[in-house]
Image: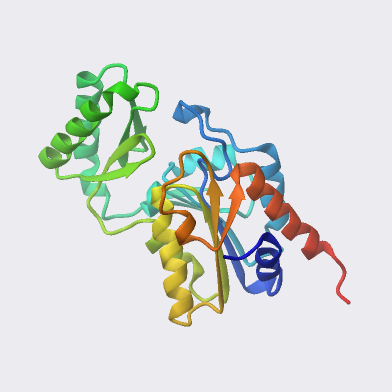
Length: 263
C-alpha cells in the first residue's frame, strides 16, 4: 500500500505524461438514495478544473450516462466515458458504441416491463442504452428485483451488471471500466484511477496489468472508502481515502504541489 504522500509524489512526478481517471458515484459524489440526487462535491468540480491542463488527461469513467455526468461536472476539458464505456462525450457530442445500438428496443422493452411489474422500485433508463433497477429505497424487494432482472435478461438477450443495491440490464458486449481504462491510458506513462464500487475493480485490474506489462511506468489505484464498499476493494488498491472528501483532499494536494515553483 502507498500512503497519501507517496500517491501525490507519483501524480506530480511527470504531470504531462499522467492520466487521472475517476468514478462518479461514491467517489466524487456522496452516495444517496435516489440516482438523480447524486451531486458532486463543489470542491470536486473546482479541483478537477484545476487539474485540467496540468495533467495530460483528466477523465470520468462511470456507469452514468455522459450527459448526466457533463451536467453535474461542468468542467471544460474533462473527458467523459459513461455507461461503463458504451458511450462517450467528444467535443460536446454524445457517441454510442455501435455494438450497443441493435439492443435499443430490447432495453426499452425490458424497462417498460420492469416499470409495470415492480411499481415502487426505481427504474432508471440510461439514454436508451441500458436500464438499471434500484432497490436501495425498497431493500425488502431485493430478491424480487433480482429475479425479474434475470428473467428479463434471458428473454431480451441482455446482460446483467450488478452494483450497489442495483442491477443493470445492458447490451451483452465485452466492455467495462477496465477496457475503457486500457484505451484512455494508451500512450501515457503514469495513470491513476479512483473508485469505490464493484464496477471499479476492473479498472484497478487494468492498471495493474498495464504496469506489469510495462505499458505504464507507474500505476496508482485509489480506493474511496465507504460503509458500502465491497470487501475486495482494499486488496485491489494502492491507497485508501476517506470518502469523496478524502479524494478531493488528495487531489487538492496534487494541485498545490503542481503549483509549487520548480527549484
